[in-house]
Amino acid sequence: MSRFYSDTYKWSLYEKYRNGFTLTELCEISGVTDKPLREWFRQIDFQYAQGARLSVKSVQQENEHLKLVVQQKQNELKLLNEIIADIPEVQRIICAHPLLPIYGPNQVCRSLCIRKSNLYYRTFRRPEVTVYEKHNQELLPAIQEICNRSIQQPSSENIRQQLMDKGFTVSKHKVLELLHEIAPQPPSKRECTNTNWQSSDANLLARQFSQPAPNMAWVSDITEFKTDIGTCYLCAILDLFARKVIGARLSLHKDTSLVLSTFRDAFKARDHPFNLLFHSDRGSQYTAHEFRSLLLSCGVKQSFSAPGVPYDNAPMESFFASLKVEETHRYRYANISDLTDSLREYISFYNERRLHSSVGNLTPIRAENKYYKEQSTAKSIGCAPFACKNKCVADFGMQTKIPKNRPHINFYSDFHF
Image (cartoon, rainbow, N blue to C red; front, side):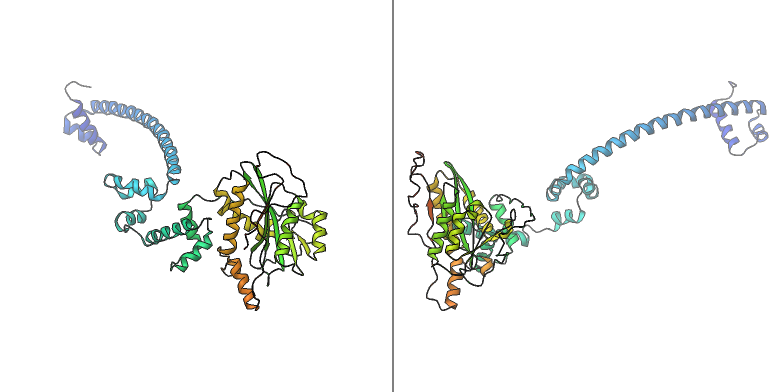
């Protein structure tokens, strides 16, 4: 290129050439012949094409780098969204308050996965105490008072009935929700598997748990309790009419004699009823020849649950579940005497003060008294005293054996329901 013309001047002529001017016109304007003009324009085209190739290559490299960065940021964002999803929205909204003046509501809601309507409601329009929170604040002291007043842990249905008597409107699920705030959730129940069963010992009860009169059907079962000195076994008998505990005995041994003694107590206390159906599971204590002979001599029909189907004996299972959740799982027992006192108090509470929805939200004793009153009976039939049977002397640490023919030790001979 000639040293008499600057690159800027050459570039201006090149732009005019690209904009439609002919070489003849450019020669007239600049006073330069067409040969130098062609050389200038050729060199400019070469420099422009080389620069374009370099810029495309750098752009491609930059594009690949940005793709990697975007992929990395997307993975990080996905991880953060999974973490944020586990945080309650109320806490996310609380964390969003200081960020609103900096980033604005739109970006904050997108980043923290918050619904904008909820953000506005809790930030600007939500009252200090909602109607539901105010209702809960009124219910919590009342529920706490009921729990403190009762030695045993009352059931949610029992609490609901007492709250309704005080004028509250509340559901059973709301009572359960508030109970979980007051105390830890009771142990979960285990699921039972149904099995097919065929046997000569039929299920005569056939899950007919609602009986029209007392002493028509009894159910029984055995459960165990842990103490510091070992395992104790409780055998209990319920009358299905009012779900009343009519006999109960505690023993250190799970044998047939425990079932025999419990049945004799209940059968005697209920004045030897006729046409009685006795239902239980197929435990060896209930299928023993000695026990079945006793039932036969008393004129009692025996019914069995199907193996592995606790639903056939649901009222008995329900009683043991209530006993453990409301009483025994709340304490640790040093010896059998402590456990006996606890069981005696709970059975008294269960029969005398605990309401049952299956008998019209009445206690078992009130349900039976109501029936006998309707039948013009002078008074209801009593129940057997709660007894504790063991094969050791009172000092269990000595483990001294006593003869088998020794009578059962009735800790509560004066205890009647």
